[in-house]
Length: 248
Image (cartoon, rainbow, N blue to C red; front, side, top):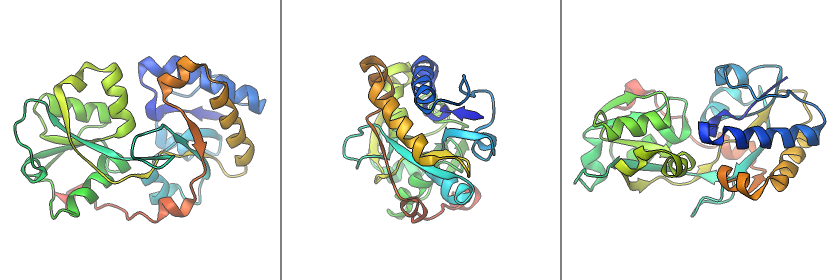
């Protein structure tokens, strides 16, 4: 069996995530002793051995729907977002004097992955709603790498998932070199999934119990508030974004 909590598993949080998983496993009464951290997440999500993992809303609606079961969506208590929802924060260099989004769109947008809801789909939809498109694109491979590309001047702006932005401000000095200029509309957050044939209801109950049992220190570090049931239709109702080659 495979369990992976890799979406927000930055180095300072790995100990807390290990303890969170231990609580889930103890409540379930079964599962791997360690979280998987050395396997590509796409392989993890699609594995018949998957017990629990966190994915993104875009890969769920693009290809995982019907291949996995939704367990629930963690709520991180983000301001101005419904429970279990999140948004993207558009960041630029702190010393960049430009103010309007159209000025930044005329430059280079860093994005983590074309299968990212927060780093790609939400950002493109936000720009399109304003009649804008990025002039150039830089694929970074990760939210923190997008932030660094902006800080280093290799990109003019990037859209970061609001939880990642919160974690960067807490744990990464690069956040001090950036400022927020805009936010996208909230969308359903990153769901927990399991393979077909698993007891998704029992797994969800174990996750809720584990959240309740987290120490105050670990709960604060992980920003975990609750597990929310968001219908599949809420994820599937969002449009698929254009491919990067067609968006710039």
